[in-house]
Image (tube, rainbow, N blue to C red; front, side, top):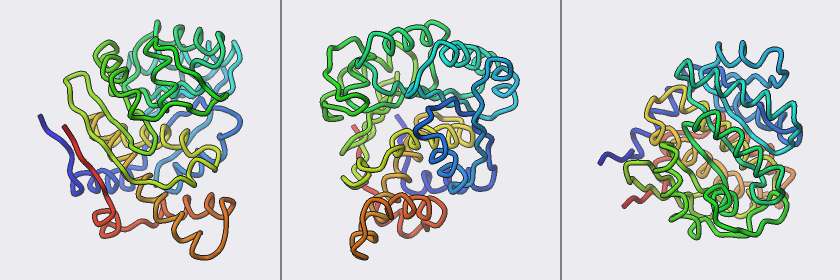
Length: 274
């Protein structure tokens, strides 16, 4: 089994910056602006388009599709299904973020509807979301997790096998699992990242950008999560050192996505695998 290294992950960062892939996002109102800025800071090109009348056309010209169910409506679920069908038909990678899975029956039904259209390339969620998608009862606090990422590893492993997809469980430790049994753990980041809305959703958007530049979805997911984790860690430390708070962290995260250098990335990265 092959696993990415600090050097290969950084090569993927450079590939995104060079290729500037177009990432089609059907995402939620709360994070739309921040996700777009995160992709731009990374070097990708975001488009936010959710109208049923154009999602097939938009998905067809994008290099990746990101679906985020944070703020749902029947029209959006239908649009997501249409875009997913188009992307799968064209071999375009799809990232699904099941925000708030388990919180309401409607969210669970939306996920079931989308998975009936086709499996995503990557499924990324917090511990509670991944447990819920796997069919394990898990308590949620709205869209926030009440389960640690470590608690969802077994469920994620089963989901990866069932969906034939890479599954990423984000948290204090990010777990990335594949259908063939690979398991990568990333331990970067900072607790303050949970106090800025849109960081988790931005992780899914970034995975889309990396999947567009790196055909191995496992490596692409690892690169996105590793890069964001190191960026968040450095940004939080700098903001705290300046005596500022989480409002400034939003800005520092975007700055870091643009400006993080290879030496800092390699020296900070905490990566392990089974």
